[in-house]
Length: 112
Figure 1: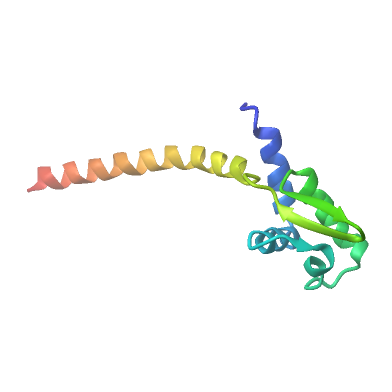
Figure 2: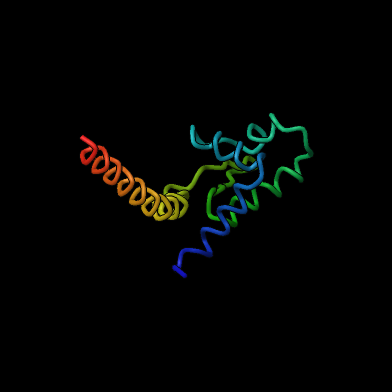
């Protein structure tokens, strides 16, 4: 099992929740203060902070406090582990599709 699987598990767990996915989508545009991030969701701030904590523990976001204002940003490269895993899964399927394509071309050529 590759070393990055623990990180992958954390990212997948964090992204399994629609609220956290929406936060990541929002942060992909630009960093935001917590109150701005929480505004679209109908939940108490402590509940929203738990979602941010999960994202931070998974390594997806980072937060910085300046005075009383906490700003959250998406960590650069945070989704790389997911991209790597998806790439590894895509490769075998693409090879199978390529082989099928070659087989179909050869079959069609034999019929002619």
